[in-house]
Image 1 (cartoon, helix red, strand yellow):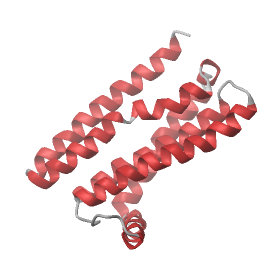
Image 2: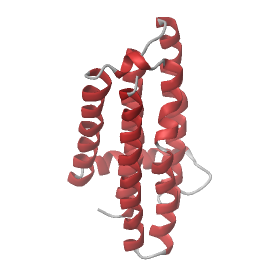
Image 3: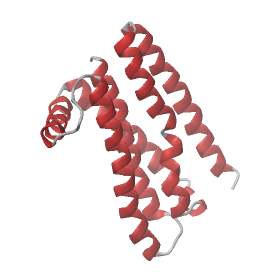
Length: 177
């Protein structure tokens, strides 16, 4: 798996976080009309945010030329669909879905964390949660481009460390409620 594929897996984690966050919002405390407004708004807003990162990764890795013509957008999605069929990318995406899915069902549903949060809190949570990932994407792109690939892999381990730390802190908050 090359640098572009690794960064696409990080980007895919953003999508996975967004998918499960919408499910969290649906189960959280709050009026149904609030949910009917904020869940689609979240999908649009968060989707635009993650698409911006996809364009940024693709541009930095030489997969897209500015300005972003429609043909380039089509090429990027073709690249993603083609890469998702590769074993490493497909397995990585499946692992991300399973990992975040396990956390969702074990913690959010199983430990009834949904009773301690609301739609507005959940609307902003993914943005805080993925800051480390997006910094890794941006900084990692520069490392992969300008420095030997081994230095880029250091960022992978730094990201993993912060992911675990943030995950544990997130669920520790609910234990005290």
